[in-house]
Length: 119
Ligand SMILES: [Zn+2]
Image (cartoon, rainbow, N blue to C red; front, top):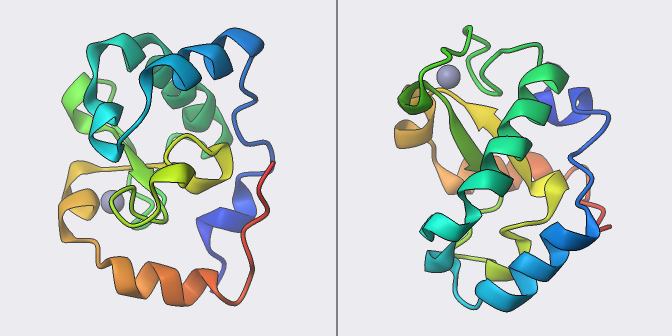
């Protein structure tokens, strides 16, 4: 079965300003929810939406355009690896249903067959 991770050919490319914003404001994985990152997350979402053909990375259902209908998924949970929180290759879009039912263990198992490149 083809996974979405092979399908995201071009992860979001962070700009200099993005990196600066992260460096100055991100210290703990909970900081992901800070309002200051809203713009950056919106840019990541728009990018991934195109890359993923507007489909959920797990169930492939069409993603809605309402802010509550699409969530940025951390393939490796940010609570487990806080340094991966803003790594573009660790990010994908999923629907709220998949986000709440996801098992971190399964995802990691799938990933271990194809190591994550950090750029
Ligand atoms: Zn889904």
